[in-house]
Amino acid sequence: MASEQLAELFAGGARPRAYIASPLGFSEAGRSYYADRYLPALREHVEPVDPWQLSLAREFEDARKAGLQREFGLEVGARNADAIRGAQLVIAHLDGQEVDAGTASEVGYATALGIPCVAIRSDLRSSGEPGMSVNLQVEAFVVLSGGFVAASLDELVSRLGRMRAC
Image (cartoon, rainbow, N blue to C red):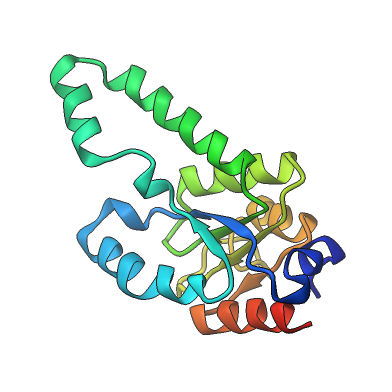
């Protein structure tokens, strides 16, 4: 069951600002799914804060050419931290043989700030300790924040929709 804080974010049909934590922007297949299916489905119930739009491929290339990759990497991290602080909710995509380290960090950071997290884990592979859908600490942070881990995008969207309907 979602926490009261999470339910309050959706009260009266509200669409909270949600930072979308995921590794989906790293691959061509991931980018396609992210843009064509994932974000449109989430937009039904939240206002996505898309970290993949906060730092553009051109900026990474410019930093590489200037030999400033580390400096730019730290800037990207700061941009994402600012975006998380400005969000009301974090939605984390936890698929993969192991949870993406950046996504796990974003979940931990948001949880430490008191921002509720919800997640999706649709991957068929086992990725956590017995009884857990992912690494026990990542799942614990999501649940302790008042959130839940959905087993599919349809389940995630349905649960968000039910909260908005209340």
